Amino acid sequence: MSNLDNLVQKILDDAKTQASAIVDEANKIKEDIINTRTKEAEERKRRILERAEQEANLLKERTISNAELKVRNEKLRAKQEIIEKVFSMAKERLKDLDEDKYVSYLQATLKNLNLKGGETIIVPEKMRKKVKSLKLNLQVSEEETVDSGFLIKDKGIILNYTFESLIDYYRDELEAEIAQSLFKE
Image (cartoon, rainbow, N blue to C red; front, side):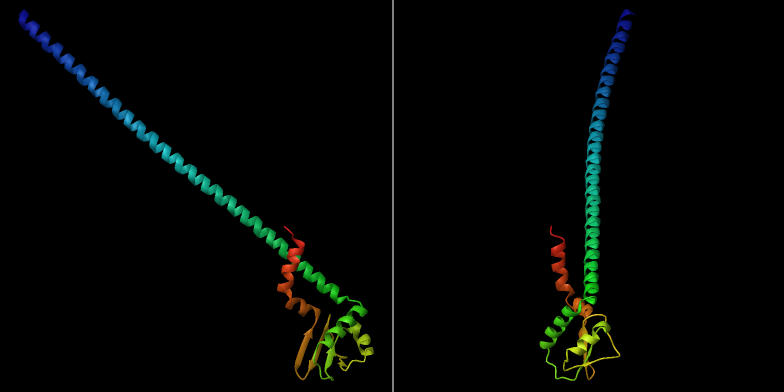
């Protein structure tokens, strides 16, 4: 029986060796799978973090760009308000023009107009007496007045030289000059 025992023992030893080899092979395969999956997970993690960082940078750039745009728009709005105040102040000052300056403006403007004579001129009420004393070849209106400047009426045609309308007419040209003067950057 000793041969049988030896044979059994040899089979058992071979089986243990094979089992050990199979277990070692299984452990090696397990380690390879774990390493592969770990590398894949690390690569996936890296890509996710990279994408998240890119998205965060893009969001940051958009936020900054939007903030800069809002600031620019707010500055433009403020500048436009200031320009509007300048035009309003100019109109108010021209309404309060003293008689001598008003008469100089009136005479210089009338000299450049091709008038036949007999037209009606409409002036501010406070300037009516002074304009009448100039003895112009125009009829000074007693019923109508303007806030500033003057109007000339002749057979349904009205020439508008009120300061408000002149400022509005030249506004685009003046606006650029005023902005340049006020906001030298």
